[in-house]
Image (tube, rainbow, N blue to C red; front, side, top):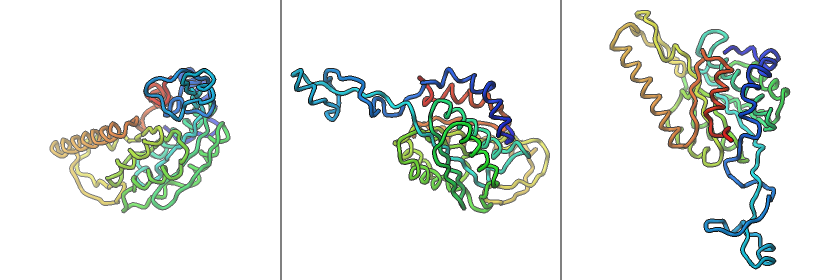
Length: 296
């Protein structure tokens, strides 16, 4: 999933990607607060469970029967892309690393969401810097995000695990208007961020896109090698061909997957795991097909 994404990728998206999901996007999403738009569609008789604040007193007085207002649902949302630019996102082969996958996903989502009229903003986050891209849409916004992602490599400093809790707090503080928040990250960092995810999901529709690399999940049988923690920089010599070590490694991967899945379920958010080996078009189609915020 390479980062060569400006005009070349955007041109390819027009047919290879946008047209494949166009029917699933156009008019196909609603805000998380159903019927909470600003335009009054009509009025109807009051029913048990209706909120008192929706009562139309003028109509009620005229018809001598309690009526409530029904609102059109908002169909234009502001989407926030929260992009993890920490040290662990540097992992992977040249041109096909996790940061490359993040760039491709972010630019494609910006183009896709903009094609339905939604405005897209972005937070480029690491523990040393924060870059905010203001809301926009269309090809210009996609190219702007591309330039920002290319302007500097992830600035995270090895030795300090990513503050995922801080990243989610910044997202909550920046995206103040209710909308859609898509977090693109490997979710590698300090523990204890699940509460912030739940708080973010109370106000916004949230999706997590977890970026992984095959070498992080399945070890080649190379014998003794030096392994380095991409977050802390700590190095250790291990025999990756040892059956016991491989079993423990696989069990740890399964444990992390289960914990992340449980955190997503508890917060009631969509979790997608994307590999750097995946096709960008297939990734986006899969996410659109399976994500609740895109279902009609």
